[in-house]
Image (tube, rainbow, N blue to C red; front, top):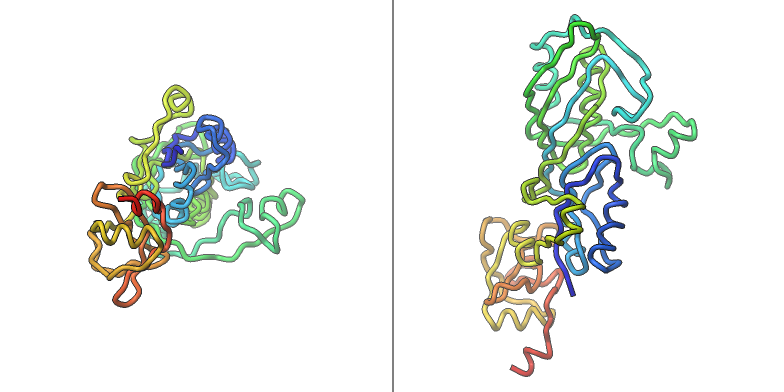
Length: 307
């Protein structure tokens, strides 16, 4: 059974669910999911799991993300991006480059961010965007996010235009809304702002260089197999044959150092355990002097009993 991750370069205009539907047909299985929704306007890295690899997705969702984006100052929209109607316009003639850089600096680091009201966050069991579309004035609570990097690459002013465009790179924690950054930067400068372009270039360890378009995947399904995917995503522990057998039956083993970190593995951030042949056996969490399996991927019990 085909299992692994597919790093998709999502096209503009497609929902993440659309991509999952296409991947189900290409992989010939219903068991397909994704790690982290991209808005239809956005393009770039969408990590898709097939069959057993869907169990890795929960550990990918919480990883840091990197984006390239274009922010337009001088216009606010109902969705905080180019897909929504413009709600206000202001001249940017008095906005200096220095003020833009200062505003970006304030929005870097650990901040409290109010998500866009047109988002998939649930309010009393209903998506916020559905409430907005029905005419309700939705106010979402601020939440902590971390902006690791907010870098300005270019500021573009048109002599005959009231707006200006800023090209940026943002590296941020999971749960950050880039269109909310655009909105907040514009608001801090007193002219409003929204997002006009967004491309995700990295999710955790998976990059745009690994990504394939849907047309390319239709020609050749490029799958990152389970062991490769887990080695890149998590700290690693190499097992002995005896430890491999114990874990294959779901039994705990003695705690041991996992490569790459001095920290203990937890259920939320487990270590990936590999058999001597390199195959992924289980995800491990430390518990005192033992390491116990959080997930077992390769029981292979009959083979081990016959050996």
